[in-house]
Structure formats: structure tokens, C-alpha cells
Image (cartoon, rainbow, N blue to C red; front, side, top):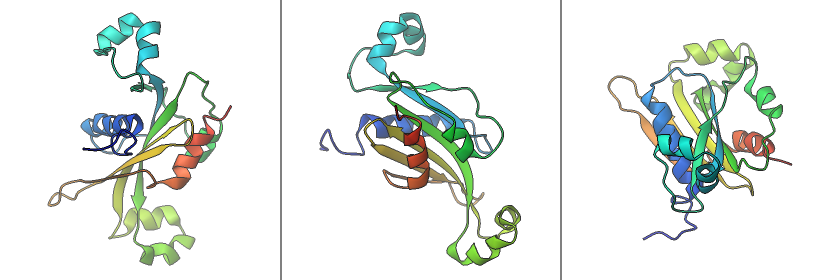
Length: 175
């Protein structure tokens, strides 16, 4: 049995896993997707028809519901996130973002043309990072490493798998 404070069973970790599963259903090669997290009980009170159509039921007061946000614009992700600020009714945010990951041995080659090196490197891995943060500083991450025809996708979870992205998302919640 796990304790209520266990990061693997926290409401944030649960909703980040839910979002990752939802995004994974649509496959790979997707643009970044942003979700605002609201308290499910508040959503039920404020939008009873929407809650009913989504199949939400009253229950755990710490339950979070992800609400898809408008697509992010073009340009560097860090600049887009730096321009966002969520109001107090948003308890957290989740971002799903695909990146290429290279082995440490490729670092020297990145100085010349990082995008070209990453796209052509034989040991590159495609990774979908789903990173969630909550007011107060809690973080949760799910990484899905894309399999290659012979190998299935691999899924890794933990609170500190994308610290820079977590910090950028937490900054969107500052008052």
C-alpha cells in the first residue's frame, strides 16, 4: 500500500499520466500541447453541463482535471512559456512536448549545427516529455521513448526528469 503523499499516487502524477496516455493515443510527431489543471470539484460547480458531458463525478477534493489550451504559437518554446501567466484558479499546468535526445558522445558535434546533427545522428532517440507542475512546486514527469519497429515504446516516470522545463512551467503560475 502507498501513502497519500507518495509521489506516484499524487493527484498531479495521476493527471500527468492521464495526459500522457491521451496524447499517446494520437501517435507521434505532434506539436507541443499545453493543459491547465483545475480542481475537479470547482469545475463541477462552475460548469455542470460540461462536467456531465465529460463524465466527471464528485469525489476526491484534490482531484485535478486537465483543460486543453489553445495551441502554442511558432517560435522557441522557452519564449512562449515565458509570456504565459495563469490565474489563481489554475492549480497547475501540464505540457506535452516531443524532443530528440542524443547520447553524451554527440555533444561536441552540436556546436556546428545542433538541429542537423540531432536529425541525422544514428543514436538519436525521440522522446515525448509530459511535464506537470502544481502551485507550491510539486512536479511530475512521464517520458515516452519512441521504439523503433522492433522495440516497443519505453515509458519512464518520476518527479525530476525535466528540471528546466518544470521550472519554466512553474514560472507560468507565479502571481
